[in-house]
Length: 103
Image 1 (cartoon, rainbow, N blue to C red):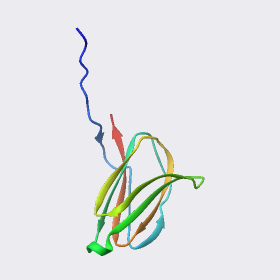
Image 2: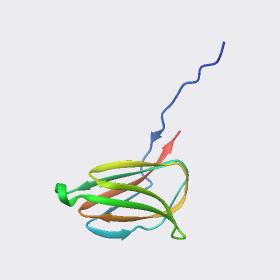
Image 3: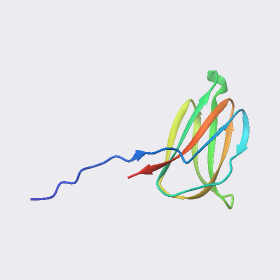
Image 4: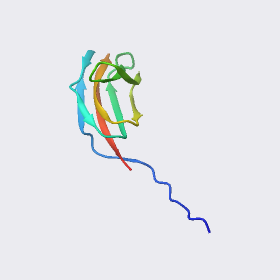
């Protein structure tokens, strides 16, 4: 009889860091995280004033991923750990959290 394996979903834990800002372009301070992790964001404002774009960069300035290009809230799964900083362009108030994933 074959052994059945239970499929478990990854569970997010508390953010290791949260960045907050408002309209304009901002680079965050670098953060280090092990893998896997998620970027979770939320914007506030009127429909036309809460769009944002998030770029994830390695310390040497190379793009690792584009995480968000939308308004409202969202999340982006990141399978690899490392040291990164975010380049965030927002047209309203925003909040972005880096959340480790527990297996």
